[in-house]
Structures are given as structure tokens and as C-alpha cells.
Image (tube, rainbow, N blue to C red):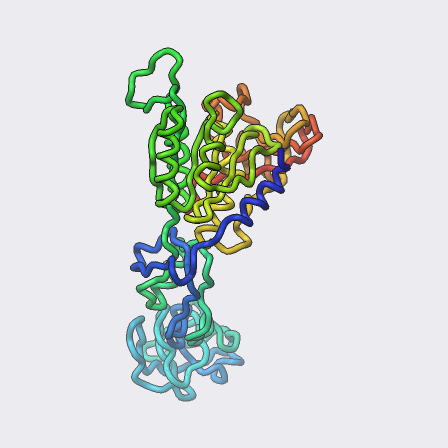
Length: 415
């Protein structure tokens, strides 16, 4: 069995990211949400686009108001009113001001905005009652972003904030990586779909649904190949077809040492090189990782037990999928945080053990609440609501309540 970190390194080394030339799509701005930026983006516009006011008030020359106070106010002539979207028509000279509103253009000659709360209007004149700071409340053209300089770097996942920036700087078409194609196969004669009547000895194929949602939440395209019975030739044909149309192929079941576990033999027959057979992790020891050199498809044979399948996905598949998708390198690996355990966390010490529960941010940092009930790899029920996996390291048997524990953060949405 490989150590967990070694298995992670092998997987990341096997993954070839999508090509920044061949695997790029140009999408409209509103269709770019959740997509991975493929190339650097810049704009031909400065931001702000012109000098503008950050406050409702009066545009002035600072030299006119640098010594004013309530006892010694300065009276200025109002020569113009400048709302947002209006181009100033007059130049401010000494002794003059313009009424101005937030976002409006600063008129020529003015260099400071006095907020209206420290002024007193008297007809076409205004009293300035406080001395502002030089250039106060003026947002200068290009002070936030200068045209034709790098704006967004490739590898970021575009969210509402990036979309807002791109819209403001008039970038309506965005180069993004295509969505990775991830195939999912469930193996086992005992499996049925949720719609089928359940007979004695049968199990509902929850893995197909869990993995499909987990993959989709990461922005990849899901290709479901359904349930394949434990029949060697049918499974071989399904895998042979699937690897020609997918970047990653995930199967659950059939990777242990039972009489009906054919996956590794089939992979070898199809020309794949197997790089991982098992990992010293609990749950999820049976893990097959193989590479098809002729198709570049990476195969993940995950355990059939539902908890093991999801834990294996979070710990091993997800980092590889991020790299494949073109995500920046600093975001490939799972995010671990230190948390205070609210219960004793136990393990037999023979494998790195992951215990599921809720990760919450308390007054003094993160806290981990162990899920109630059995922590069996077949107990899918108490996995519901999981937001973190607490790690009991190899050769440790107890992390006592109140002690610090490393917790892998689980997000319900990676878009």
C-alpha cells in the first residue's frame, strides 16, 4: 500500500492539463460563470475611465479651501451642476465650484471634492465649513487599472466578482478551457437504479449519483455509463469505449481481490499502465489508478462502498481534476485546516484515517464535530451534511477531545 501523499503525487504527475491552445473555447460573458480562464485577459480601457467623484458634494480647487473652518468658511460660486453621466461644460477657476454627484466626471480645474455634509448652500453660492484633504474623494482615471496591462491571470475560476470586472471593462468574450469530460461506471450484479424495485441482496447504485454531482460541481462534463454487471467481456467493452471519449474515467467496485474483481486485469489487457493498486488510507484502501497512453485518459478505480468512493474522490480525484481543468497550481491540492476536535477521534493506527463530520468556524478558530453513528465505509447515512474530514495520521490511535486535528475542507460547491 502506498502512503497517501505519495499516491497524491503520482496522480498529479500523471495528469496532463488541458492545452491552452487546443482546448480553449470563447464564451459570452454570461456563460463564463464557473469556467477556468485559459489565457491572460486585459482591457483597452482605464478604470476608472475618467476622473470622477466618490461623493456627493462640490468640486473645488484645494488651494481655495485649504484654510477654511466653521468659524472661517470660504464662499464659492456654483457655476455648474454635474450629475453622473454628464460631461462638464465649464472649467473651475479660483473662487468657483461645481455641484457634483457620486460617479460624475471631475470638471477641468478642480482637484478635490468637498462632501455636502460640511457645506452650506446659499443660492448660487456655497459655504465650505471644513478643510478637506488634498485630492479627497477624487477617483483618478486609471488609478484602479491601467489599460493594456494584465487584468486576470489564467487558471482562475470565474465567479461573480471576475464577471463584474470583465463587464465593467467591456470584455464580452472570454477564453476559457473546455469542460473536462469525466465518465462514471458502476460495477456489480447487485446494483439497481433508484427507480427499480429492490430485491433481497440488491443495493441501490448511489455512487453513480454522488460522483456525477461531485464532478458536475467542479465544472466538468459528466458522461454516465450506468451499471455494468460483473461480466468480464461486458465490462471490458464498456471501459474500452469509455476511455476514447473521456479525460478521466471513474469506476466504483471491482478493484479489490474478490472473484468478480476484474478491473485491473481488464485495464492491463487494454494496454493501460497501472500506477497505483492500493493506498494506506481508511476508508478507501482499494484504489486503482491507470493511464492509457494512446488516449491520455486517466482511470480511477474507486472502492464500491459509498463512503469510500466519496472520500477517495475528495482526496485523490478532485486534485487531479483541478489540474486537468487548468486551475492554477496553488489550488490543486486539498485544503487542510487546523481545528479543535470536540470529540475523541480514534483509529487503529494502521492507515491514515479520515473521519467525517462538520467543520465550523467558532470564536477561537475552527472546530470539528464528529458525525454521530457508525463510521463504517458502508454507512452512507451519516455522511449527509459532511463539511470536513478529520485526519488521524498513520501510527496514531487517538486524538483526544480538545486537541488540534487537521481537517480536509469539503465544499458543496466548487464552481
